[in-house]
Length: 542
Image: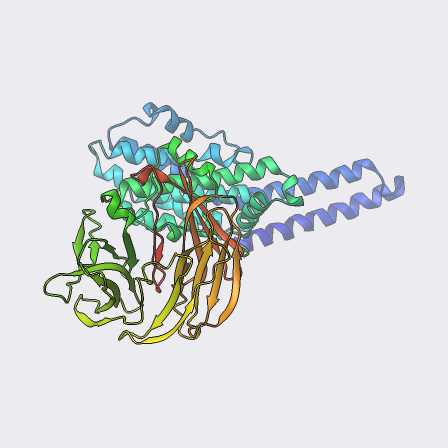
């Protein structure tokens, strides 16, 4: 392609230079280079060159759209449907006016029609396998040409986004009989789209504002809406036609400097848009039910396999959540034969070793006991925590709380008081960094209507630093955890008025790096009761 363009440039400019010399000599004799006819001729020649170059650079894009149209027609015929009798939206999609440069991306390729076509065809009977394979070949060519157009830096951002949409639509239809492959391919295409510097700049200016945001506001907003809609449609396709379930943070993100933008959940209005479109994202969600009194008195942990383990007040054994049924099953046996131990809290390390603090039932002077379980559920240690008084470990949120650091065998290493600035403050979170080189212990404190304060201690109790996390607006019932991979603090709060859960990610210095708005429709009770847990390998659960 580059050789063709170079040859055209040489021939064209060679022709121009010859004409300019002859014509210039004549016009110099008749009045100089200011002659309007001479300048008009130059402009026309340059415009003609630009048109030819644009046509060459857009050839792959036009070919991809043509092959996509051809594939859809063949696909409809293979199922005994005339391509002219398709539904109105598909017919509009197949109609192009022959002027791609003037066509807006959203009007040229409607991904919603591609997804709808998959849905309709799933309920129809194929009449011609040969035509079906022929249609798939057209989609393959369409995807290849769209990929070449997408990677053509000479095209405008609008054309490259259009090429990406053709690429995703072709990827879905090419693998219409294998949605899992389609999902994998399209997620890759989507990530490449998000990695474009122009897309990052558009989202950065759109969300952060500034002087640049005052210019091209409408076109920028339209582009943001196009990218967001593309993400939503692909998410809906994956959720409906595959069994793939993903973590919210595993979706292809848009990195804008220090900030990371989730294209589906980056603003509050996104939740309402998903509700209106009837789209359910493919997030890994398990719904379970527990009596309200049990929910209020439970503690969760998560291991490297993303298994969630809970301990419930009144239960004798830690229980693991069966993600298929939503039921809780015992995962570790109590070392006490008479089952007199109430589990109170649990934690899991990087080797999936579980640490459970429990107390003896029916005794006013009972002491806390530390049980350490291997990843297979067998007991490693079972020893009393003689240094605890009055259930301090379970009452860490009280104004007189003390933090204890002990060895795996229950031996006390150090203890120091929790710092609270007023009687209205409480402890919202307690976690360790997981980095053996630092061994930082962080205590998150604050009141429900104030910013969170993070007190970062060394293992011997020394205060290293204080980090202030400023929330965008006052909210209630927030929980906090630590992402051991990105080194971000994750804060979860409830916007009860809009039925939304707000998740904010802060850097170790307190800067906002990510902000997500999630739908609360999966929360059973009217009141927001949330638990935010994480594992050293990066697994996070809300």
